Length: 385
Picture 1: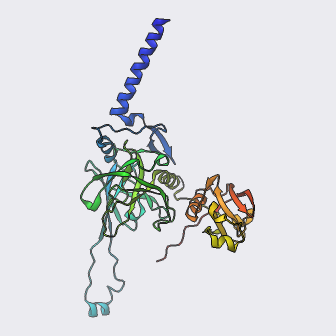
Picture 2: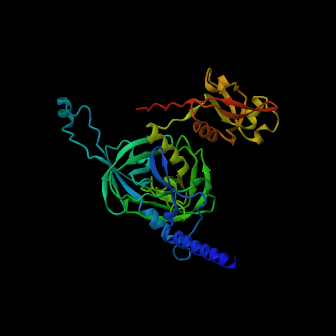
Picture 3: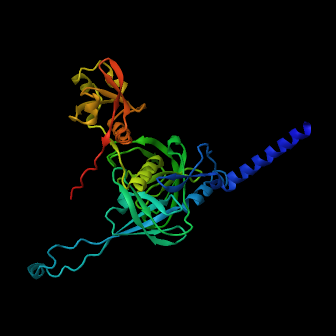
């Protein structure tokens, strides 16, 4: 018995030692593969621990692992030709205008699949006639736009190259304020650059940047050209797509915003699977609850302090109206997830699957109830030209 126990303990010791060696030197071996809409991606284990594998305080290993999957994106757009350029009278008065130089743009992207799928910002590739992707190993390839989602400012590209390094997708929902992060991209076109900082805030919205906002805020330096690049944790796992900065000068002022990878995964799956992003819609006019609105709709004193979103209008025969939602109702949760402002309600409803009933927690007067609403499909706003 003693000999068996000794053998067991030695075996466990050897296995644990091997695990820690792999976790330190080859952490990607422990990452698990999965599929999003048919796209093979690598996702970090749910129990992934933070670790730094270089010198004390160094994130060199994380930077090395993630940098290989971050690409530079060059775009070009043909200059618009004057519609009167071929008119003889126009040439007589204004001369031959000739052709303007094509417009170029710079940005970054992240390879998320060995099969060549790349995440970037929609504004990086919007309107581009030609897109060139430059890998960290200097290889170049023309990229095809698989789909875009202007509402979240995300785009999916595809390149055809062999042996592509794919980044590991992390769990952005597990991020906490104060967690160290790295921003990797191609600022100002100077070449790939890594900057470090911390998570300054989570769930930033109502910034007027995108229709659906749930930004990670960071003080890691993000500059023009970083758009579409990677925000990673100390393991080199992708936490977000860098998308915007707050700046009065055009350069970093320590306030940058990234789209969480949880949002990016939803967009990727929808675009690859359905060709577009499908979102829910219930047909209401919501407003943030304040004392003035509470008084207008005769809500009980202190209602504004409890939070929620007040419904000031309901579309006739819309999903909400058919479910019994009325003006003056206060929605405090969607599928059990609390909503405290219009932006949160919009995002929660957009995440609902059209045609599938979902419970909304509604306060009406002194009562609270769960009302099942079957959302319709949210239509994309028409682009004004």
